[in-house]
Image (tube, rainbow, N blue to C red; front, top):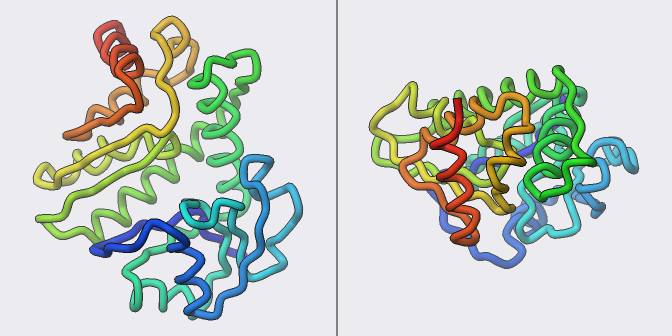
Length: 219
């Protein structure tokens, strides 16, 4: 069965508190709470229910949702477009490359970082799916905001196809020093992906400095 791992919000302005929860309740779509970090698709097998969503339901970007008529309502009512992934693809993209390769390394805990070639392939494929969906949906005057380490290839993928769109990217976790970042396989592709954005935001000046140093020292 198909599942969706993420939403893209289009042309909408929503409140900061309980946005996703309120939308799901209005559409009468049941959901259950769990800790997405533990292992989003494997920890408690909530795929048998209608929807999975992490504990932080006011800001969660990742849910599991059955593909049925309710997903059409998400666009019709709220301009949300779900992206549907197979279970193995979602596991490799999210639990694999995003949270087992990128997340530990970017948080300075490299001994916990793991890498498998298939994870990278799925990470690329999912970023391409996002790019295709954005390009199908966005207007020429739209501003595209991309969030976090799951979509680090996406700015360049969009930029290659549309030079007119304005693209912003914000990283919600640390960006480490070059000495650590260079341990990442495909690090140059990640940097090139980010440089497709017109604006890149970081939490602190030190993260910005690390990023600039990495750009200058890459390749």
